[in-house]
Length: 228
Image (cartoon, rainbow, N blue to C red; front, top):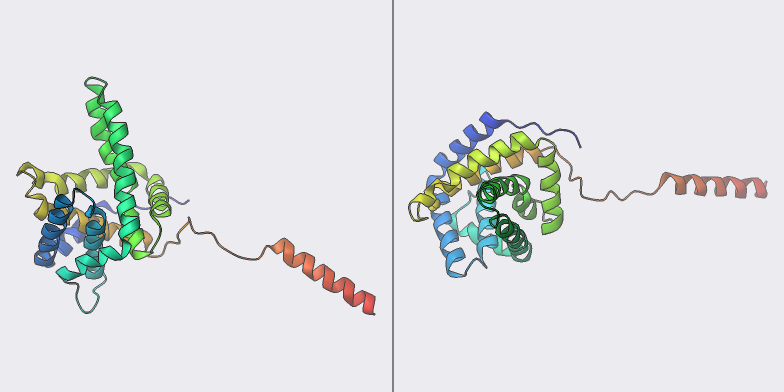
């Protein structure tokens, strides 16, 4: 796979503008999403995040009518795959992080690094689920392969966007309602740029083998010769 260009400044600039222009709908949608995710013990977190990304994609694409807070619940159309995306990777991360934390000092640092590496590799997964209607595993692998092509710069995007999005957690987590949509907007801009003219490499191209065509042509030629 060709190396994907990372437009760090452009993505962040456009992401902040998208956030500022749609502050009200994004913050209110984020408030509802995190509230429902919390009261359901994370069960609805996947569909709610999917709903936020649906809103962000609609805003960046300038869809009409303009996305509203109610579009958040369109995430339920992708309930299974969004739930599996959050649950499977969340469980795997928890297991690995728990093992790393058994190692004094180094384990804590490694866990922090793991957070951002995982976030970088999977940053496009939910977008592919809602935008390309992919299952959670192919979407995860497609995101992984794109990011892997230019890992260090994508990791830088994930770290900075993650710090911005998570800074609200210092206020008992309440501030996440305001700061998380910034991260979502940055990732949305990055996703649209990376996948605008990009084919999904995980999809299998179905085309008749050239060898089979040659065999059929040879058979037809033999029949013609026989008739002659």
